[in-house]
Image (cartoon, rainbow, N blue to C red; front, side, top):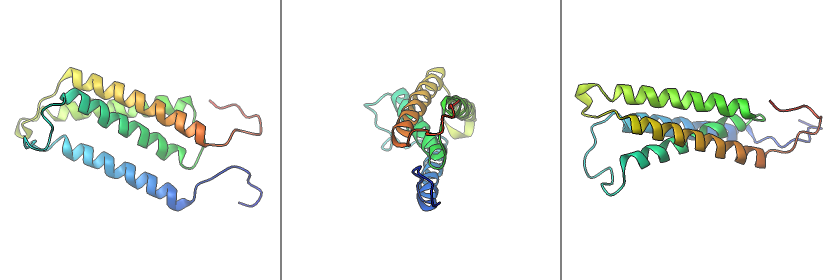
Length: 141
């Protein structure tokens, strides 16, 4: 917009960020529900660390998707953490379906929650660092 002093990414960039986030999330869902061939998942890395890293990435990408076209605040961080935590719980519950040959573990859900929290927090910090400061004095929530 003419006269808008705030930096706004183009619509194409916003769509790209959201597309990458959606693809990542779908890949996570598919990857956690297919029977795992032994040569795909590294055996020298704990499954818990894989959960932590995957949910960290999801948290960062979701915060980036929200921050792509508007200012973000702490409330966004809390909502996204709750969303990703609920997804992690659902993911663990659905892994108990016998035909999937997967197992659900409390420590994996804990890693999902920690990874999501750290990812959303890092995403918030990055978004606040990249976004211009508020000039009209309107407080952020």
